[in-house]
Image 1 (cartoon, rainbow, N blue to C red):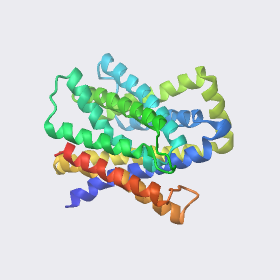
Image 2 (cartoon, rainbow, N blue to C red; image 1 turned 180 degrees about the horizontal axis):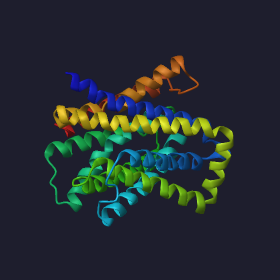
Image 3 (cartoon, rainbow, N blue to C red; image 1 turned 90 degrees about the vertical axis):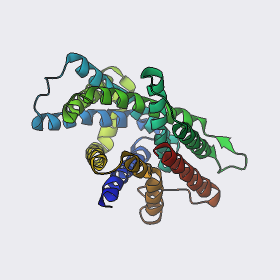
Length: 304
């Protein structure tokens, strides 16, 4: 069973990254500061990650030009999904945002069906429908007497998850025949490169980045760097777990990320409210727990 703890380590680390993102958005992306500064911080960190990978990886320029272009484009797609993700965090709790990431496999199946001629099994269709039921439930505002759909949250996160699925398919297509670290290098080159382009040609984001840098640049950079390290370690743990355990079981362990995020936000609300806060009213918390449970059940069906 040691594989389970390795597989569970990945969503736990990713959950910590989500909590860090929520903290940064709440502290540095309100009012005049906006989310543009965090978008640039998140993208420009790609330059440093690419340099770090480049130092320890050989054969970086041995892959075809077409693969380099695709991977660099993937870096640009990463910025796009980060923008939608941060916009969602500006208007909603992280525990309501993260469950949406479990719709990524659905987009992956749909894209595979359209572009790769793949077929969908009954389990995949049923699991997808259950997940969609869960995210629909979590998109309802239960804090008011008159229930209301959080349509902006749905729009932002559906866009974000679609872009993640597209980026993942491109990355997998190229990395099938190439080294993982070489592919990651060019992806981060794209992330950092597009970040530089945005800094130079999007005045609003540049102003927000400069203002944010004056307010807490070193702290933001450190948290972003730490988050990227945790994200990479999480990816490595997930990849290693896939080598020693059935794929379906590893994916099911990963589907626990929303539950882990909710647990961490509840823990932080009790002991570290300056980091994260969760609405503890029964009319909000109970439907959220039910929605996350439904989404996890859908993921179990999807991956079995």
